[in-house]
Length: 389
Image (cartoon, rainbow, N blue to C red; front, side, top):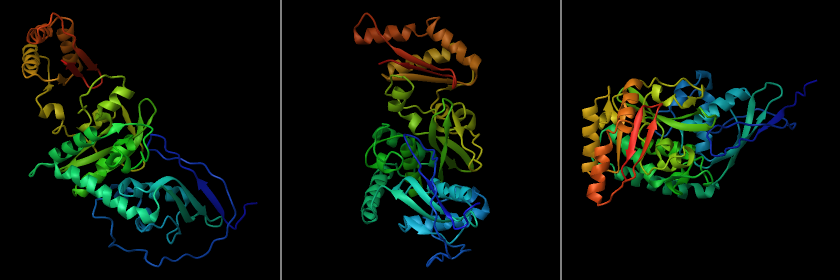
């Protein structure tokens, strides 16, 4: 017979270089009673949410808005454990709780586990206790340091920059100032990136979201998996009325060298303001909330930089390669609009010797009799990269 006095479900959430949270539990008997909040009124429509656009709040079922609001208010006020005024079943509690965390990267002190108390009579969650990584008395000072670090990044953005230019600047800034490191401390929150400068995908994505929020720009956090089965996190931004995926982690050459077996110092711009068609080649999002359609190609980096070719033109590719060498660039990149164009370019460049004149010129200007260049071909995205140095 089911015990009606209540039960505690303890969900230990383990994070290990990933973004997804899961749990397991044990049970203990407790008693429950009526809970009233001294500050939270059910049905409030005006409430302080940090002045940001909360994508998850706006897209979870409306019946969860109340528990979301209460959790946000309590977490913001450092109530690491508390009884709850709004009551929802356990599964809905988790939906609301992770929605709060996905909308608010500024909650940097949240740890990797949370204990909830569930009423055996109603099945609703009646209280919670969060494991934290920073003591309450130290959070304000640390928050000031994080704000200062974010503002240093923002201060470098040129006056009059467009939204795209701001997004690109933050993308490059975080990559330049962060190394991918699965052993880095606090790598599930913004501390690891903005203060420690070492992190994993969750840290990169939340720091990117945090900085854009400080500029008053829309940015949300997306969790899911990669096609090789690993947990992953990235972002979606908005420019005008259109949405775009951004994956700062996969733009970092340190990540590419370690995880993809590459040898490069070049940033990867494939994941800067890209479409669903591009991101979903290797990323699989969770279905917690419906995601906006990302279909616009206006801010494809390769198109904007004149590196995109709808079809293969040998003369155009030859001229672009030689101009790259003459300009003493470190590498040459070309992205093609179709697989046929990409295959033709790869064949002509590497098998039919279209690259030979570039190699000859490099030998002449460097006074050597041989020159070793490296190249990478990305069949999924139809990109050819040649590293001259």
